[in-house]
Image (cartoon, rainbow, N blue to C red; front, side, top):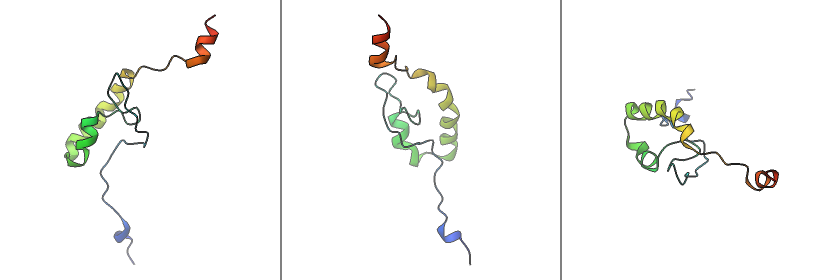
Length: 77
């Protein structure tokens, strides 16, 4: 018996199911894609998706890290 009937041809995606858009960078903080890229992802060619996936690591510095919240403010004194 073949297991091929249970296999699906999923589209490669960098999604990590943390879907929060960074307000300044306008990128998803989970996968680093723009809203436009996320919306078009399933209609892109494999080459377009691969190009975007290659660019994602360079986008990480665009997200400004939190400064520590309340605890950091308390420690400044």
